[in-house]
Length: 148
Image (tube, rainbow, N blue to C red; front, side):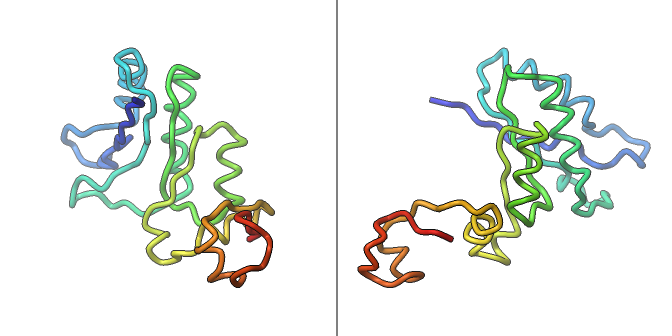
């Protein structure tokens, strides 16, 4: 059974003079996790302290990219944070920032985001026929592969 672990790459508290978790710590820990059987590391950032002055930014993916570079193919790495388009997600995959891209809070605001991503990327989504009926009508003869 694959073992997934989500980690905050940094507490984003570098401006405070107190101990905190930093990206360098994650980079040192990731190979150890791989050696101990973790198959997938989902690299997030911040959110653990009220002191942090953190806003979503594209640089969040720099944290996962540095982790990915440090571990190579020893462990799969995921990234999350501020991802609002399929093209943006695909860019991170093509640039080897991560092996997988996750969208969190944005799915709450845009529950149809998967359909939007598919449309942007010109790909088909496989869905159960009953779900597709709501978008394309029952009995359209297309089967269960629906074009976004």
